[in-house]
Length: 285
Image (tube, rainbow, N blue to C red):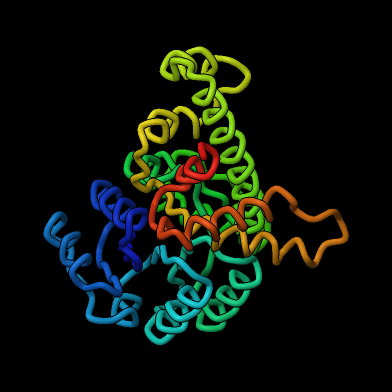
């Protein structure tokens, strides 16, 4: 299946490289041309001169961009060149509403669409171990599995279009809580002047153990916040979650609201491009 990738940032670039390893990568496109040229040099895969051209040359297209408006801009450009039956797979994190709008545009132009947000961080993207949450027709998912299997380890069909993004919203809310708990707990331990390497070793094997602490504990304690997942992107995602929650009768998301406020303080201090573990900056003060 000739596959194109649109959006070659940390996540999309790693996906493209893994698709190349699987023999599936056919064309690439990125808004910043220099980044597309880097992937071209590593893979030998041609950079398309436009999104519509890429769409006309591929059987499957993966989108990995940052914002809802970016997704819809890309979707409209794909629609100008898409071939009948082409599978469009959006791995971006956007609202369920945007996923449904994108699906309507693609399907009205004789294509197929799946919303497939991912989790697992930059490490998961690099190692092709992402967990993929799929919204859309389950029969169409079977068609897309060879492509998805090249970038992820676990592929779960959640439900109809938009369900993948709704599941990702759940993931992002939980990640906010974990970030709050781990950064606060480690700052508490550091404040008691404990040997934090030993603390991490002790608690990571017990009930408090989790992926975030395993992958970010030592780096945050060292004051290093190189992004696996940029704080400003999680902030954007959590704003989507709050917007979704505002339409529900159930209680709101107080922990998420607190995290949004904390992130806004950090963004104001110039830390938006750091990893979300930069929340530790506020906890240790």
